[in-house]
Image (cartoon, rainbow, N blue to C red):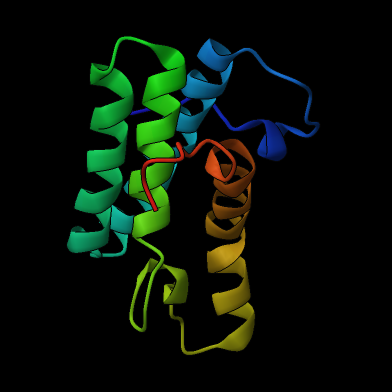
Length: 122
């Protein structure tokens, strides 16, 4: 399935409306999920799908972004969490290349979701 590419992959970052931010977040997460599935990381892929589901089912864009932010950030806590994930290849150059898009997506998702948390959730 072809997904819309994230702004950071296309290049550039501009101020966005919540609805645009939501659409791009879902696109980036979908691309990330595809990578995780391809790499056999089914548990992490399911967690990413849960974040996408929140974005698609909550009607208000601002509320959807808050919930997505909470869910995405919660994946990154503790040892062995999503923040430790990288794609392994035995050859260093292959490993660097394999992780490029994943790292771009991760960085962009922090830009999109990093500051959208409500005060009632940690």
